[in-house]
Length: 387
Image 1 (cartoon, one colour):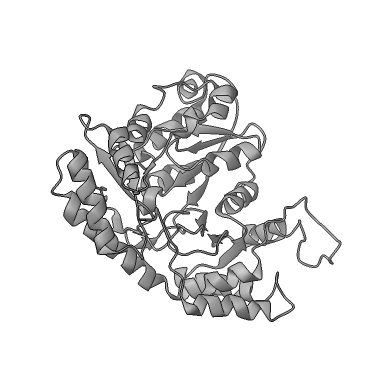
Image 2: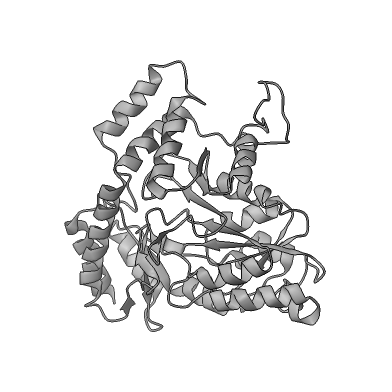
């Protein structure tokens, strides 16, 4: 059976994890320090903070940015729900902006307009707010972008206007490790960036994530917050802050350390599989391959998501593939149409038409760096037959 995704694990990773099991330190030992150091060297940043998940990392970025009760945060409706959930954790309000039709990333020109209108307040601001649960008097404090499917957001126009209004920019690069935007690494484009390491990601720690930033004071705060609020100088039972248990354990860090050392290899293998898909799908009418923007100097393939022309029944294609033991996934159900978002903010179909359209026509195909060319052939041949 073809797998939807598979991690790429070698003997080196297994040996590193086994070595940790022979030590008394299963948490807060040398492996987390080595893992973080590997990221600092790889990206050239001042701080890398290992955490228990990408969601935990995004949450700590919200806290470091001082975003809290009733504040507004501009973000995308076309992403994994975690990018919105972390805003809600702090009782702030996500302000959605529709996405670029070609990339699926947040539309930078709409972000610029939203910032201008929300800063001005009044009727201009009202058009961006949900029907309930937000006030035009609420203060806009940040922008949370998401690098969807491994392609960086066109972020320079967003940064320009964000800097004018002292807004923090959080770069959700959980799907984009290794990608570059105008030859600058994803994750370091805003004030804070976050990568995630679930088993389907470019590298994996099983579960886990990492925050990267050049803001040293904020980094110290986030290190304290991941460790139950213990600030530098606190003893084991002293807690300067109300914090969280967001630590990354030593076993996961050891796995991640080896995976980072293999990152170029892992990215190349994923690129090879994407190229196989490109070559075959280019010949199938009714299928649109992933679009890469001119600003993307390097894509980091997280998933391979195709789109179908209006005349193609996506559900029929997906079911036919499933009948042949080929799994697929619709990507994404827009966040504003999730049940809890409809209930809390009264969102409705039609609010963000581009995101909704992409959610209806997109399909993620089986994808990983260990996928064989024969498996890609099978997937594409089946798609062609059913269309």
